[in-house]
Length: 122
Image 1 (spheres, rainbow, N blue to C red):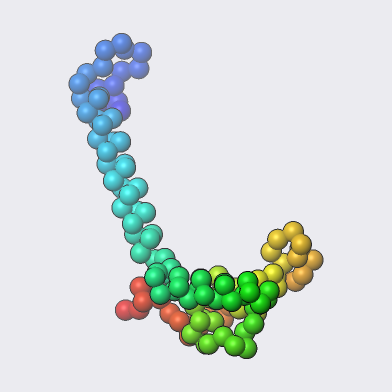
Image 2: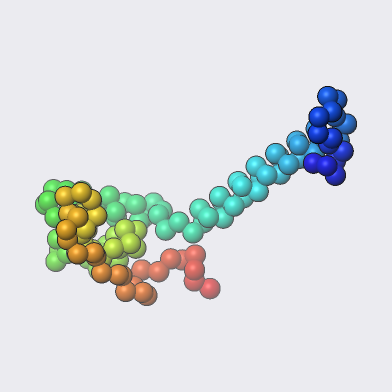
């Protein structure tokens, strides 16, 4: 701000100061917007994975628990990718939440599962 001619306590500032403030706010907004766009490219939720997640969630809700025996390997991989937890530890079978706080923590997912993000492929 001082480089643009800003003087603290002065009632009337030079015209360059208002241009500098406008530039900082405009460019700052565009930089944050660009960073948000780049981060959104890494999201693994798209139309296909969202429909798989919704169908599996609906099935879990109807059954009352996660039934991995009747789930295809692809659907299981999609749900694990989006949830970040093993399929068998979903729908209350974990220590997340007040009612299940005494259960042991869910095991970590194995890297290199069946479904990989297309963004990270070279």
